Length: 356
Image 1: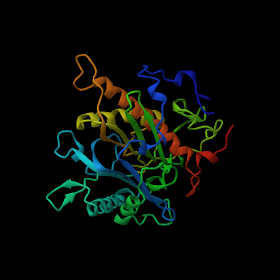
Image 2: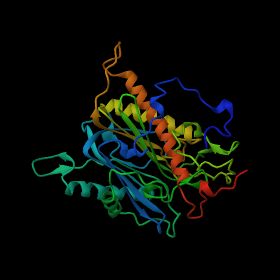
Image 3: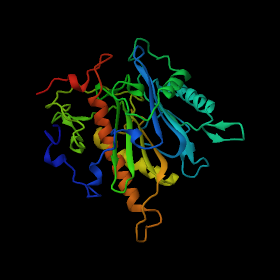
């Protein structure tokens, strides 16, 4: 239905065939919760045009992060560096509210601590490890600053579950804007031939556009897996005038995940590779006005298959395949976030744009 319609031949990139059969098998729900061990929840404040999204790993997950945007707002980012002590995280908190949104992570920590989920400190206490990142949606509701606090994080946790991920104008994507149109939450997954699952969740709030203004279709429409965009990609849409950027007023936040057993350096590499999917799906990406971040979570349910050769120990080829899949999942999730968004707060959604 969408496919490559309207995409110029020279813009279609023919990648090296890294297990092409693998690249076209989505998981059961085509979302982040297809990775066993992950729960996703949202808190949405429609009136305030903002919200919070959490990804919970009840058994912990090896974490990595890569920050590419020039205006990030984060918490516990340095902890994820490969050389630092803590191996596992217990949740990721993504929130609207810009710098004020970091308060939502306090509620996630309290929620997990009450349930004894965290890094053991002694026989009676734990320290939940909750990296967090925020996006700019200030001024999109009736008040410039949404009333975000720790309660938003707790409410998002209470709604978290293993079922299909709610997408569109929910959670951190409630007040999101992308290239002058309505942004939102998107998610996608793939199952590799090895049985390893890879998935992504993204809050699209970008300065750049997901749509090629010359062709009127998504930059990465070619990545459609099965019929996930069927009936939703419209003929060539007419984009509104590009927004005038200002420092720190955007940011796309993403979590990619796999059930593979990874080390922290490997998780970092997957996060780095996944950024390529963001950069292909949003142009420009990683600008001076965005704080673009990708987290990687590895829940450790599947061993990496052994590969013969000099690089067998770090399983280099398998990491290539997981990273490539993570990038494609992230690009598809970006499109899903735009397709599922609804017009709100003076922003026109893709579904409501005029078309040729």
